[in-house]
Length: 378
Image 1 (cartoon, one colour):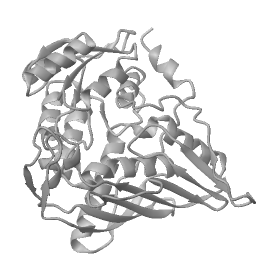
Image 2 (cartoon, one colour; image 1 turned 180 degrees about the vertical axis):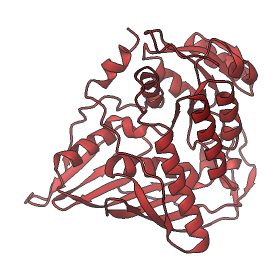
Image 3 (cartoon, helix red, strand yellow; image 1 turned 180 degrees about the horizontal axis):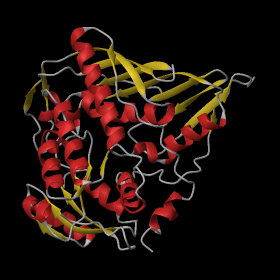
């Protein structure tokens, strides 16, 4: 088993599997932090691994070589959703800590296996999304905690798209069972709401499908047809443990949309802005006593307003030393996945579905988190 260097301040040695379109962003973010050192990159397309390895001064390797490498402490799993479970289980079985792109697994059975493996081997697991650690949602959290809008009473999240065939290089899996907008966008929306307001207790959902076939307009598969075999528009009513309830819409069927992707309603005002899939703003808020009915833009006092995918990885590395629970850790991923599957089940059976797991609201990042993370290895 690979033992992480928790007894000293040597960097956590990282490898990445899956060098697709999100990998460069992970690398650019994580390379800011002295607590991380990239060792190897692997991909089913070797040329991708070579390019990413050159970017971060690592070596290109096969998937098997990365999983079994004795000089790797933690592996980042950026493979497609359909591969997450098998690759993550192999990583944990090899005795390495894991950070996974969202979702951590496609089914509750798969998730349970990952949780059991990590517990049995005493390994840390983190999972995207980590956007709630960015300046935008951290500012929303600070406004809520300060009482700026009074007591929160409701929320609305709209994660709307015309479909991933317009930009994704290989979007087929998004339109098959295990894909779809709830599995794709849901982790962002549910993570944001539960991090801001607390855990979910129940969900009621409905689903539909606007088109039976999609035409890819992105390269390199432009012109290919996709048969759609999963719902592509979900609406969910989420009831939180604290008594607040609100709506979440995740859709691939909305080519023209506008408005705020996130709104939090309070007894004395409201907040809007902060797309749950991004890290920045703008964040607008107003109170009911404002006679001019003016939305004010909040100052982003926290760091990481730019695209900072990989921020959760840095927080996980910090927790590997401190023994703390990572903010974007396995407990949060488990809760989010249970909410998603409860919504999927509710949409099929037409009934409210309970959510049994609970997760704490994570502590806000300190205002100097950028500097703190960068100094972790010193």
